[in-house]
Length: 381
Image 1 (cartoon, helix red, strand yellow):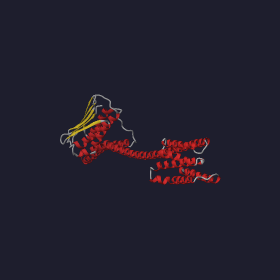
Image 2 (spheres, one colour):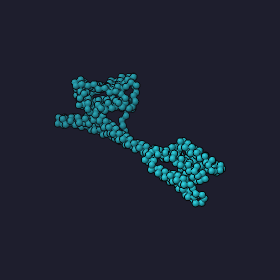
Image 3 (tube, helix red, strand yellow):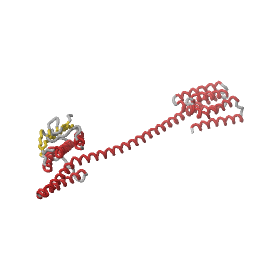
Image 4 (tube, helix red, strand yellow):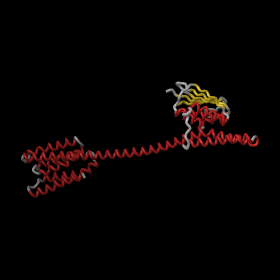
């Protein structure tokens, strides 16, 4: 569209020259030749610019010289000043402001010589002033179009960046959702392991005991079945709690010390594990810290019941400042920390995760025949 307007201006000048030639005096042949050359260069500019990126500089120089020479050869042909309008437009388009406007100023300044070539000063002054105004108007129009085009490209680039950011945000949201679901599944598996594994193990022991006493002592069999029924209710309650169908049992009412004592009683009742408890100091810990310490204690006692081969354990809780700690100790069979089968299970990994969540440090000491010592300690702040 921009070049179409330029071509129309040139065609209008040629049409006016033909009319001038018929109405008044004839136009010099040299002017016609220069006018044709001007047109050839004008219509070939786009094609040559695509092949030679530096061609617009040469084009602007040559066309400016041709336009000024035609004005000096035929100063009475005031319509020839219209040829400078496309040049003013193209100079700003090619060189950008302010270089383009400097070029326009030099081009229009060169027109001042027509005051001395065949025109009265009033007509020459009118030509110069009208050409100057029109030239800078065309330059300003070109500058506006150039800036509009740059803003359009910038908006397209920003829109593309926005689309890419939106796409990345969607991918990130999907990944975050998948990670959240995976973390939730992992949390559920860990809670099931910590809360139900020992109950199911105790239920299995109760069934085995009931089978063994079935023929020898029916009354004792009934006791085992009652115990099995109690364990099954406890398991159902734990499942409902994990699924959100029952209120979660909180340690807030009695705190960690009371919860550990209750846990020791449950171990004694369900599995015959005698848990000795040593408490030193008196200090309130955050709710999430107490909940995770309780679960670590629970898992450690579960492991003793299933693997240690002993019926006694020691839980030592130190609430002294500045460093609190929790220890679970047994004198059982122990295991190899390097390649023992128990190190690959979910229980020890779950303890480590819980300790990391609350910012505590977990240390496990064990060797075959030497028992196991689990210690989780508060990191000094």
